[in-house]
Length: 511
Ligand code: HXC
Image (tube, rainbow, N blue to C red; front, side, top):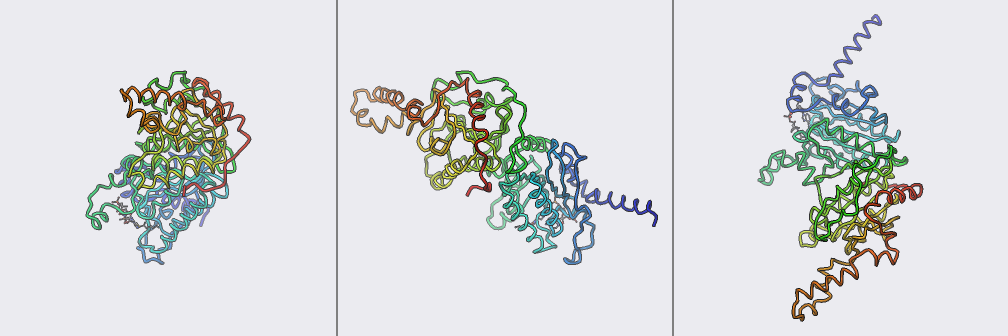
């Protein structure tokens, strides 16, 4: 055999492996509006030339499982390492055109290998999921493959960022690997996640629901909260993913990359809080008036919208922001908002990202539904996450900080390093109306004009308690600042706290 011939043989073998599934399967993939696994790796890596694929030549052991002999290119998954904005990442992309991207033994071993590689190198792991689930012909071998992946997802949690992109079906127990990772991306009309599909639900419970309604992209982004980022197309999802990575360090032992300081497009003035205390406003506009370049990457944008969380930068340095949203449910804390905030806080703490908490909340949402949904247990996660966090913690009280929510939203008592309030801050056990009705009940009832008396008592209470001065006199808040001074004050505070603390070592799933 001449050298030339063997090279040709190699090249034709390589071409068939690189192609993935057959023409029909690739055609089907395109008809569903989906890219192939290889195209997706290219969309992810800014520099596709940087990709080093491993295990392309791995084959599954067909005989063991009585499968009809088929050449399953790469056993239905592409694995390797590459660079995003010149920073290395580990990648796997399931290839639906090869046996439906189903997970057999060799397939899972390939994924496990890059997971171990990510741990060893201390780099983020990105998984692109598009699979019919456990490869039925391989029986228990596929189940053990999933188990080994879940085990590693858990061990890697809080050590390297783990990101899942759902670009096709993700069903049965397979959903638990993405659920154990830090961030899940879904794409409109392409992603589907559920434990059991519509058919099983109809058979067992008689309930009818479409696949899209049950586990489609918007369902996962808005109702269940299983997905953190929703996109309209695959390229949009990968662009957001790259933006996300730009805020993160490669692992928990390193600091996030710093960028050039850029002023916000429009800085805050002194009139950002409406005169009428009951008027709502959008906290995202205030965030954009504070952070570098007004660049705010919101996480969980469509879920529990009464709290806003996401990444931004202050003077070039990554921060994680947790802010009550007065525009939705007046910014109350409830079960879902608590879970959303707690998980985000734990992520930032794992990866050395300082926290900025922006407070304007009337407190925890009262009601039978919330009590029975476990608001005590879920609310406790916020207290736990803030108390546990050892990254620099800054708090800004914008308006209402009532009752338990004053404590929970990163008060000094939970270890905040720096707490500022605007003059509009109201730190009290409860809102003036509720408080006046309780403590002056008798006087109001016996007054000639109860309404006038109530208003008078509300005013009295406001003057006495609903302001930042009582807390400032006692040193519970460090300073009172004009809203126009916020950015500069926070930058100064952060630079003082800069060297003092890094995150704690822990996983990222709140208990
Ligand atoms: C083996 C599979 C497969 C699987 C799909 N294929 N899923 N092969 N094991 N789990 C193969 C099909 O036989 C077909 O091969 C090719 O992939 C494409 O599948 P289609 O059905 O033609 O595609 P589509 O119509 O788009 O339907 C996609 C699908 C459907 C909805 C995902 O394939 C499906 O329902 N698959 C089974 C899903 C499932 O029940 N998985 C097991 C879940 S339990 P050919 O050769 O015809 O092209 C599980 C346990 C994990 O995952 C537990 C972990 C703890």
